[in-house]
Image 1 (spheres, rainbow, N blue to C red):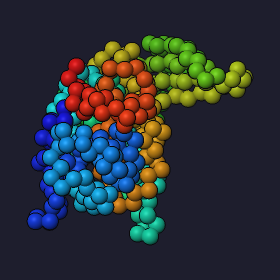
Image 2 (cartoon, helix red, strand yellow; image 1 turned 45 degrees about the vertical axis):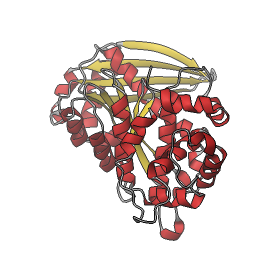
Image 3 (cartoon, one colour; image 1 turned 180 degrees about the vertical axis):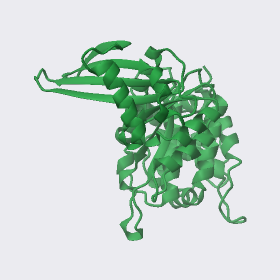
Image 4 (cartoon, helix red, strand yellow; image 1 turned 135 degrees about the horizontal axis):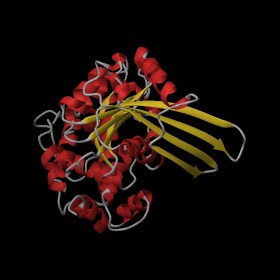
Length: 376
């Protein structure tokens, strides 16, 4: 595992001046990954971990000049080309994992809240990530240009990924004809949230389902109707699917469009009489069974629950005070590498937080995480 990781990052261009390099780039990267797994949150933490574990680290790293200082870690990750680092990361993940057929690849963005820099008029960085929901793996990340939005970053991210026979899910921000076309061209199917920002397409779909499903005398019944009660909230979800809607003139330019879905959510909170109702619409090129598409819509939100929430709560990403754009992106990627390594460990049944602490205290467990994951 660690050999494949080193192999991918060994081709990364070393941005430091030749003749002044005292620490190998791969050593710096591997120490940083191990430290982030072991709860490090800053360059100082990473250097402290390295000094504390130097004897153990020498078992598989060269370390010709010992452990780098925290200034060296900070400077190197400021200089590393973040785009290239992210490209190597995606190549590493896809080189060790075979995505399953119809794997749901959820794409969504997250802002690193404290990465703004008022002095340099820099807004907080917003990163778009790709998440394999069944295998719980981060497949890649890309930065959203501060002067743009996710629409420009999503195509760049898609170019990094091998998407053949997968199902790519994106919320309304990524519901664009060009993005749908790109997904199809890469051998995948799409499942995109459709909202009012699509104007005529949204209005046509809304009218179609109102007539068939939600008005008196409706002729199209739900293919799925179930109740879900959690945290004092009772939710009834009804899923309607129509292949006829895909033939609407307003949707003619969507690549390989096969199915349009409508999901009605009716919520009752804490037994109150107040009922909240919402209807959401989705476009898909997939020919999969309707229940699988309905399940894929639910699976999309695992990127929020199993990635973004974990980054905020367990890795304290929003509390990070890093300001330099490339350093912030590179540290964000180190966290995602750590998540991939930890989440694939099945040797013990405990929380991710507990696994991180055990890895910090137990060198054998840390070795198991970085050497043996993905070998099952």
